[in-house]
Length: 398
Length: 164
Image (cartoon, rainbow over all chains, first blue to last red; front, side):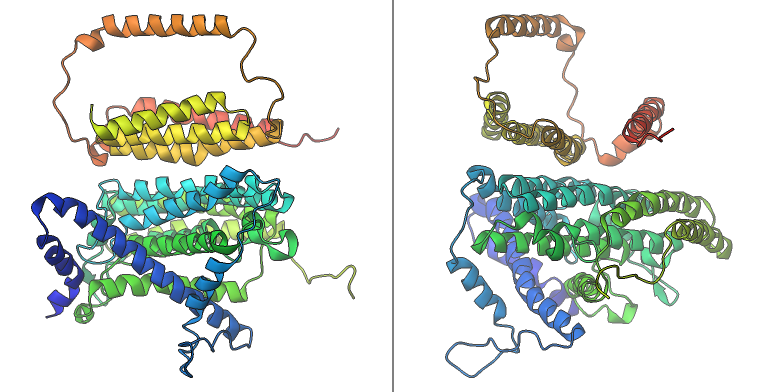
């Protein structure tokens, strides 16, 4: 029973494909996977927008959307009809294109943004046997395809012929390139231990349960450090607060998608959320055991539930910090990436090498923890000394 | 020649031609990106996953951004007034044809063309990694050193000079 529930989508797909003539089967199997990815993550995007607005509202002592329900009735779905209303609004809104804009590039930019980020979702193992594209070099594919989004940001910012757009694009690209380095280096630790770039193999390597904790990489010294580096860098990669300088409303209005309206704006919005889902799914796959349950006795819950629970957990974490942390300054952002994150990611690789060569036991834990925590404290202390952090002084408004 | 290869080839060549012919420099660099992607698709079609993805990661993710930044920070990407063709294009064509003929002749007569095509091997990423870390570790390290030197050089050039 639990097994068939776990595999229900796989069985459903096999059953549907078997109904068709053999000639059409491979094509239909691929199309079914694509439809599943787009519809599931599309629906998650719709729900997440409501959760985000409600969550932020709660943090700011407001109610957030709570009215939209089924039209012409008094049924309110606690505001969960909001994404449908938003979608209709985006569709019927006038599509404004600046006269000076570069028409072709301006038109292509939202597409160039959405396509790569949707493609990255294909390699995530969403459940047992539920990987749409099970590649030997899956992790490489993930980062290679995801890098395409940077160019789309540039296309949007440049083609709009707006200074704020170009500022936003420049900021976004500088940030994405800087944080991509620690992001990829933090995953190297996992690849070194597993010995494979395939996300499915990485999840399988974390499948056991030793003692009272599962064998997830986050429960090792290097894994915890890698996980923290990964989620920090992933937050910066997806331009989320506190790294949302590229769209800082108070400085550059909205950043690179300033000159977009209607559904093109909605596509940018969607692409940003797809990027967040991809980052959360990859964080879960690499460090949190992917679709594995956290304890042996919880194995009856289907694997896909665990994957999406972990991914959404990351999304909620992002919403939480968006509501509570202030935005960084550009120089702080760059200093943090190059002077702190990059050395930490490199030190983490040393720690993982030690972990690999030492025999299991308490000494291995102590040595690896010291290798990670020592530099963390020293570097953090050293960098903070030059910062002259003190009470904020208001020069003009007092 | 298969249909996927034909599509990839046409797309890549069209993009490469666009990169040469378009008037706006930013358009040219974007067309060049399409050519890079087409090349990656050709690698993938040959079952070379690692090379294909590395091509995308390095060229689309990094080199293209570098080109675009360079264009923006130098000439502002304004379209030139006059024709994109140089006044001495006849000589250019002759030199290009000569170089192409020379290269084609050399390749056609080299040992590589006489070599039997190797049996189709499935090169996994693991095998490539093993080879890089054992047999080809010295070239890898030398390239790493070279790139580090280039990086430090770039930083030194960009560094603010202290006032004396």
